[in-house]
Length: 166
Image (tube, rainbow, N blue to C red; front, side, top):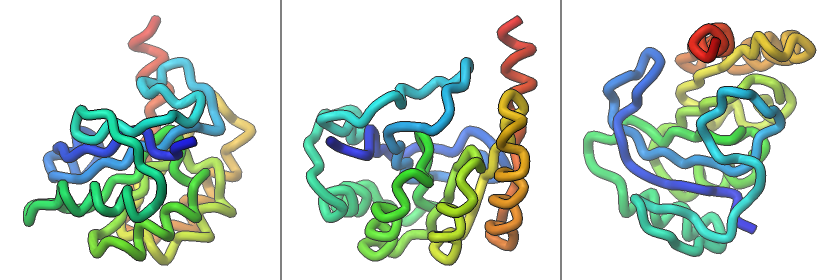
C-alpha cells in the first residue's frame, strides 16, 4: 500500500512561510482522529494523486522523481504533511537522500522519538499542539524541544476550529 496520498506544487497557505511555493508531499495515516481534520488519512491508498492525476508510485525513487518533475526555481521547500508524516521516518530519509530540496515538516508533535530520528534532515518545522489531546502535551513539548533550531514555529488550531464549528 502506498504511504503517500498526494504530491503537488502550490503556495503555503498558513504559518510563517505563507505565500512561499512548496512541493507538498501528503502522507497517509495519522495517529490521531481530530474532528476538524480536512485530510482523508484513515488508511494508505493504492494510488497517489500527483498534480491531479492518479499514479501508482512503488517506492521512494518514484516519489523523488515526481518531486523533481514538479521542481521549479521558486520552490522554497518540500512540505511533509499528512496525515502525520512522522509515521514514515524511513521514507522521509529516502526522500531526503534523493532530492536536494530543504524539508519542511508539518507535524502534530505527538511522536517525539520519531522527530528525533530525522531532526538532522529537517530545515523547517511547523509543530501543532493539540488542545483536544492533553495526554500528548508532554510529547508535544519534547517534539518542539527536539526540533528547536529548525526554523520552528508552533501552531494551535484546535481551539479556533472548535469555535468555528460551534
